[in-house]
Image (cartoon, rainbow, N blue to C red; front, side):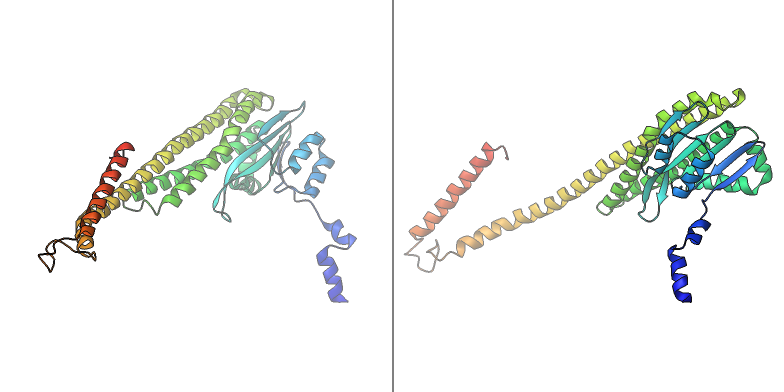
Length: 331
């Protein structure tokens, strides 16, 4: 009986277990401003939001959606922002886009990362554990808090870019150290990382420009330059990605040229061997024929008619092949 009861509780079959389920809501506050962080929002968290905030129904649909494009929606009393940031997925070994939904109101900022975003998690943890830091961060209003969240997530991209740059440098060194065939996969992986990074950053540039335009609603005049800095950082990231795109394409072309040159060197050696062996093969073939040969055992008999027919046929075939190659401009 006890085992059966435990099984029912583990399966969540009893009403009491469902009643005890609580939404995963984290929040800090100071000076009338609240920062609510809801990581991986599910049905319970969305129900809690609908109970405490009167957001537009389409915003709740966007929160439930898995793949939402970066955008910013303006409402009379709040902003709804969707941003994407690159996060390295260790399970598949590549960069993926992590979505961050943000609600910004006059006295609150709500962040809803669809998956853990390290800079956002670190900033919230520091804000919740350090009272002095929390007071300094939240005392400047929701606009400044929004700036810090987005700025930290943007700055998180630069270490990734440095790692990608180091990888490109190693690939360049390996090309000229005789490992050109082995690094074809490395070039493909680096190229895929750059493509994924560009796919994340490109649609977000317009959103950050729109955010710069709408910042005046929740940001005091002396802090306007901060959002200009976010746009500048985003453009720097894009410029670096453009440069990496050109570099990886140049490295791929160089690697193909190195492989081609080595194949040509191999073919040159094989051709030289073939040219050296060809006269020996020709002589051995002629004197290995089962016909009378010039200078054979019987001087009176001489070369047979078959021998001269074979030699004539070989000369005709040689002349025909030379004429065909000349016609095709192969010689």
